[in-house]
Image (cartoon, rainbow, N blue to C red; front, side):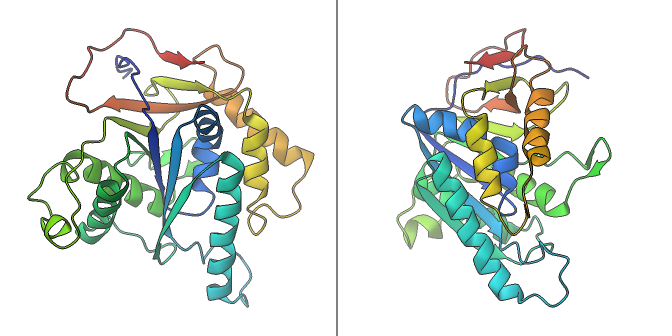
Length: 257
């Protein structure tokens, strides 16, 4: 079913990206983040797991790999203009949508007070022939529940206020990484696609011996995300306006230039 797109009012001045693994953000929204930071917006990354299972090497030091992937994530984020990083350091491959995980995301939302949150699509069990990683679904589910209603409601973990002074916070704009008919916002990344490629190459433990074919793959995926919009390269999202004065739905997908 194709849902009527909502008028795009976002993202505001401070964007928080919440993902499962180092490099997830670069695949999902690197071009968007680079575009928005160029416009003077602030970007914050929250990475839930340490990425220490991201290898087929049976003899690897998993602690060393986790440190490497954290450093790669910081390098990639800096290419895009990300100003702050939060690492929750859950075990890679074992993330679950628990109340504890949701509380951790709520704490960071109340700490950083973003106007917008981008996260992974919790409804996607597969995309084409790709089986979606369970960590992706878990962090997407926990983040959606943290954004609404938990970060907003004082009586959800009131100790965050009493012990840490963290006031409840309403996130105005929520973006789920999305392709297909349910995407309703398409961000034009033609001017930042090269930065997306550079940021992905910064994950050297995952993108070994990057080739022109890898760069072409990234551009091909951005082209596919743009198909519904008429843009050349795009990143696409299911967008929700959650602010106090929600606008009525629009009837056409939104391109952001």
